Amino acid sequence: MNELKEKYNRLSKKELLESLNLTNVNQVPKIIKVIINSGVGRAVSDSKQLDFVVESLTKISGQKPLATKARRSIAGFKLREGNQIGAKVTLRGDRMYYFLNRLVRVVIPRMRHFRGLPSSGFDLAGNYNIGIKEHTVFPEIPQEDVNITHGLQIQIVTTAKDKNQGIKLLKSLGFPMERSNNG
Image (cartoon, rainbow, N blue to C red; front, side, top):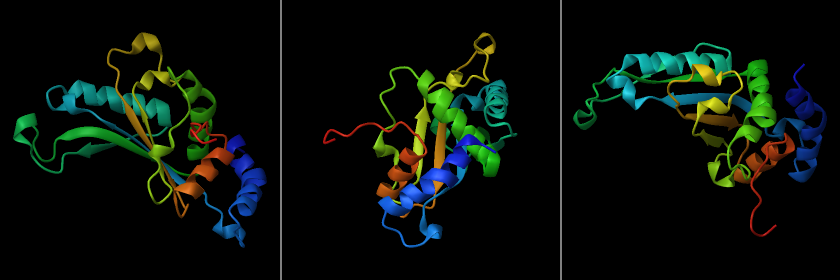
């Protein structure tokens, strides 16, 4: 069993039940899925770049990504409706927990100038978004093979009712959140 999933089931559920003043264990927020997304604007002129992004997302997530297509044409960017412009992967279950465990323990500590994850990444529904500027912070990507660097957007979808519940959920799982000015 995954360490992060085990930690959630053993410790975090009880801790969140008490700290959020909930009456039922089923009310405790949990993580539903993780979506990893990467847009490739240069893919319009060079399709090899999209292939590179798909390959790197496959290595990072452990499953084949879905190619995303442009919804409408934009003449200024020479973009046509239906062109492939990115890739995304949705992780659930054990793969999600393995990815989050690697993210917290390996990837985030490797990020340059890291001072904690900002709480501004939460939306009003308690979901969290992390932007990573370079995909090379993942250990699955060998530095020698990298010709092009690209960014990633990681969205953690939770059952939290608000931003406060989302923050407490991620903190209980060991996510290094940025300290606020007031404490």
